[in-house]
Length: 213
Length: 302
Image (cartoon, rainbow over all chains, first blue to last red; front, side, top):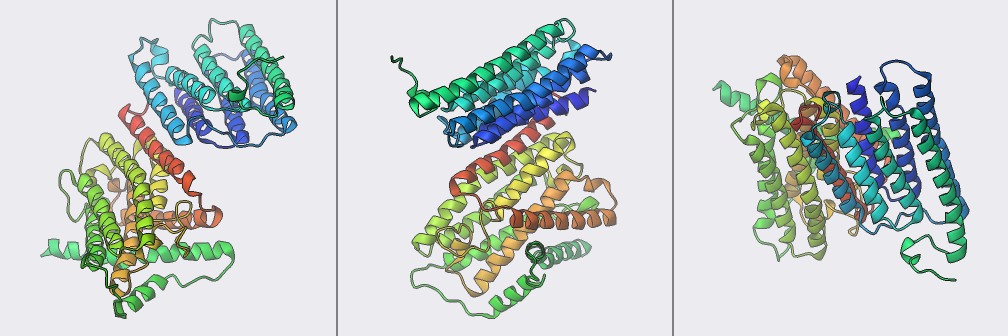
């Protein structure tokens, strides 16, 4: 049980680095989506007894993060007709090294924390830390709005991993609410990206710093 | 006497089998492309031909130009003799020979680079600059890989390090070492062994001014290096030291052949990367080895 879960979380940590290293927007979107799907299956492994609500939430997470959100992003990409290069502020090799350092740091930090015995053996906490930091790096170090959205998605995946620590006490309705919020946010961003592109002819956030009439 | 005979037998096996590997890779590439391809023994014919030819030397070169390939060849042979084969152990084994192994490989590269720089040609200087800048990252990766095996086995001798399998991080280590193998042996996606356009060559451009027996030494040394890396990869991942001698040799030969076939497939199916993308791929190999180290250090599950 714990072995399969650690394997999945390890895969998700690897996908953080894939997202940091890829130079094309579709592959960043794909990495974020795949990570969401992997993390979506975790509640099924964590919960000992079968409960239809857990299955429903896991299924909903996989559908929304794996299919609906990436499709919204790809549609925004197509509608805004921007080229697919990522344009990093921080080069790929430095951001990859930074992400790796964050992953190693997260593993070291989690070893120091006073965790519950059932969580100490799993990669849940280091995975969550690493994913949050990698999402941050992606958010900070890329100029295009779409890749920042992907960074935001990866950040959310990390917070979701943290949330799994409390799966026995959080009502699953909260989880469903977060998922709905996320979908609406991406939906709105998809529309905004299109508007920004029409208005300013660019999605480079460095140029979107001044307010104008 | 038997010890000397053993060493001679290993030496003969390493030296005679090494040129087979590029032949196998070329055969796989030809097979994927639907050609008949050169015979598997082509490199042996080439070496024999080069050995009989005379040496053409530029007036600008010093003796280092001829000495470099010879020194590199001897260093690579020494590195090969440090690698163990199954339970039989290595020809030479002592505490800390993993470090000697890394340094012998680096020394071989240094000698070839020096021999290339000795010609004073601008192109060869460029090739050396590229080769050495790739090596910085590749060496970090191989040191991380050896460190992983050290931590895993609690020993700094190659014979005990390579005997068990790499444990939980074996897949990471295999992927990282395979990347290093491709980079160190100038294979596609890092370098194209078939290209003969000076602007795109890395390794090939370093040997442009060599001819005759020194070139034969360089080519044979390159095939030896490929075999060394293939054996290292196989022994790091598979628990060959746990098997009896004959099954171990069988498994070793099979896995080295598998590495050659996969290299041929990679070479047929991938395009060569642009120069500015190469450091990213090498960094990825380094990180794979580093994460294998992390897994080994934390004892499987952190």
